[in-house]
Image 1 (tube, rainbow, N blue to C red):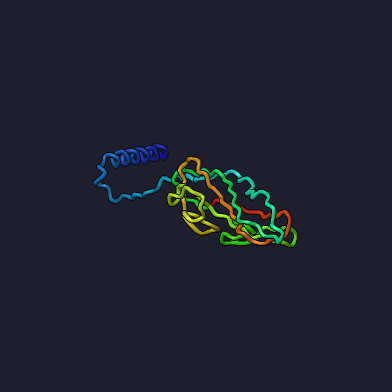
Image 2: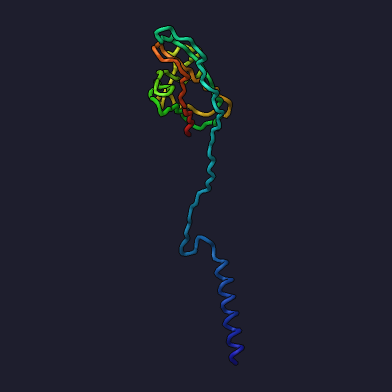
Length: 176
């Protein structure tokens, strides 16, 4: 008798579930709804070429050691992902704010380096006055996915210096 009674209980349970599934959704006692987000992160990047040496050339100083103002230029190519904000920094351990020092032993020579970019402020000439940025000051830029040529324009003001080969190491950094 016990096996028949268990079988009957199973049948009653199955019939109850079948009837419950026929009840319309609006007649049920409660519902729970949860939302979730879909997410996909796309990071941007920048690449750059190494600028060549900012070579001011060779000059012969006067008998007193006076040299005339001298200029030089070099450039680097930058490509940043379209829409990616970035900025540039030019630094040296020997100076700041656009004015730096080259050394030859214990002797020093003052020089300046400026960023110039034809896209910034419509600047297209090397005149040291329009659209220049130096050190960590200036304009933020936005990547286009295309090549941007960044020019570095240097100037050695007229000054008195001893004979020697003067050098400094500049660091060009792109931050995004």
